[in-house]
Image (cartoon, rainbow, N blue to C red; front, top):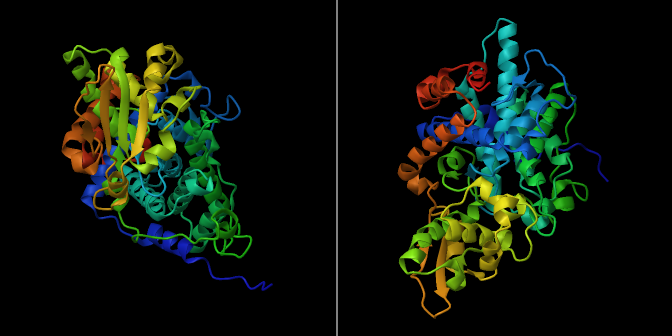
Length: 478
C-alpha cells in the first residue's frame, strides 16, 4: 500500500478556488439573496412562537456570557459563533417555510445562513472592539450565494438520499467553505477544512421517513452549520486535512458511503442556484407538495359551489412526479408535526377541508379532526413520467401536481394542475410582493412597530442593506 500523500481531490480544490476567487457580479443573485435573507430570518422569528424550538435555544451551559459574541435574532442571546450558528440554524429551519432546492438531492441552502450570519456577526463585533472595520451585509449576501451554489450544484447530479444520507451533509460542506473564507483561512487551510467536513460522520435520513419521522429534521441544519463553524476554526489552528478524503480506495467517502461512485457535475460554480432557488411563500409544506396545496386551495371553494362536502368525496387522484412519491406519499398514522408536514395526503386534505394550510395546522389540535384522516385514506398518488422529466429539466425545474376529485355519486371536478409554485423563478413577479408581506407579518410577531419599521427600511433597500455593518443589522433584531 503506497503511503505517498496524494494531491487534494479535484472536488475539494474546485470548491475552494470558487469560494476564494470567484467574483459575484450578478445583480439578480444579490437581489435574490436579499429576499432569501429576509424570508429566512422571518421564518426563524415565526419559529420562536413554538416551545419545541425555543427549548433548544441559548448557550449550552445556561448563563454563559460571550463578550463580542454573535447575537441570535429575535432573542436576547449572545453566544459563541458555534452555538449561535446552531441557534440560528435551528430556528430558521424549524417550520420548513422558506427556500428549497430540488434536484437529484433536495435541501434548503438557506440553512447555511446559521453559520454565515453567526460568524460574520462575531467577526464584526470583535473587529470593532479592536478598532477595525466590521464586515458588511454584502459579505453575508455573497457568502449566501456561494453556499447556495456549492450545496445546489453538488445536489444537481448526486443523490445522497439514495444511499441513506441526509442532505444536511451538503450544509456542513458549504458552510465550512464559506465560513472558512470569512475567518481568513488560506487556500491550504480551507482545503483542510473542507476535507474535515467530508471525514465527519454524516446524518442518516431516517429521521425524515416512516416509521422514525421526528423533530430532529427541524434542528439537523443547525447541527450541520454549527459543526461547519467548528471545523473551520479547527482548521485555522493549522490542523491537518485529508487530501484524498473522497477518492481514497476502501477508506474514502466514495467507497465507504457512495457505492464507489464519484460525484458528477452538471455545471461549474457561479450564481445559478441562488438565481433559481425556490421560495416557500404561501404554505409551510414540504416543497414537492406546494403545487398540490395550491391546487387544493383552488378546489376548496368549488366544493361548496357544487353543493358538495368533503364527506361526499370518494377518491382524489394526485398526478405527480417521482420525487414526491418517494418522499411524501405516506399512509398510516402520523405521529407528530414533522410527520404531517411530510405527507402529501395530509397537506392536501387540510386545505380541502378548511381552505388554508398554516404551521399551526400540523399541531395535534387540528390533526385530531377525524375528517383529515378519512380524506387522507381516499387520496392516491400516481407518477406522471412527463412531470418527473420536467422536474429534472434544468430549463424548466417544474414541481408539478394535478388533482382530480371524484364524488360518491359518480361526478367529478375538472382536474386542477399547477406546474410551477408561486415561489418559482418563473413566478417572481407574483411571488416577491407576497414574500415581503410574509416578512412584515413575521416581524410583527416579535417586535413593536418602530422596530419593525427600522428593519424594513434597511431590508427592502438593496444598496442600504449591502452597505450596513453586520453587527448593526443583527442589532435591529434584538
